[in-house]
Figure 1 (tube, rainbow, N blue to C red):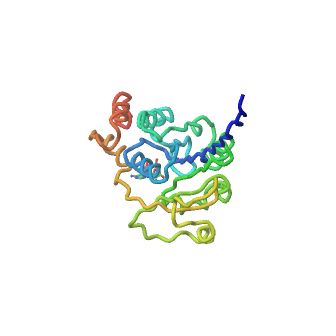
Figure 2 (tube, helix red, strand yellow; figure 1 turned 90 degrees about the vertical axis):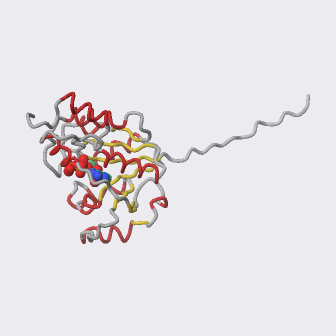
Length: 228
Ligand code: ATP
């Protein structure tokens, strides 16, 4: 018998998972949300981008249709569209949807090295200092600010120091699980849920503004029509 070679030690290192989060009322979800989410997911090579419908949004009016209907529409919209997925946890809480709570819950389920990216439009980012425990957000995630090429507004003073200390110019250079801010330049499609609700309330078509499966759900449940 010849000498037996010891088995080669194979060490595999799995890269950290990259998870994006896009919160919203999704009343209803539309192609602006979906196309924007997909572009960010592709540009940042995300493993998963979680669309997270909010239950009772702290910053805005009560949604026009039920949480169940908004959730069902987002589910229809992302079915089979990897890496977009739905995260329904904010609808399962009987409390206002605070992003910090959602992040803490998600973090508790993820590996410590997972990278979490919170997607925020520029307007939402500027409103950050009014959010519940906003100064703790970066302990749990990076923030990706979706900036429009034509936006020219200045950030509020409360965010200037934070931006100076935490922003990096290249979103692909965001390192580690959390703690930094980067801008992603995006030309949004000129679509809003407000516009879609108005079209439906006046009996007009929203075809091609929402995925066909969402339109079918809206029609089947008579959502947003003037009689609702
Ligand atoms: P509403 O018209 O009811 O205010 P909305 O269309 O802005 O709704 P939200 O559910 O409030 O939709 O949006 C959730 C997130 O999606 C926000 O971060 C928002 O900036 C982003 N978003 C909304 N519309 C677009 C769009 N057309 N393109 C890219 N992102 C969008």
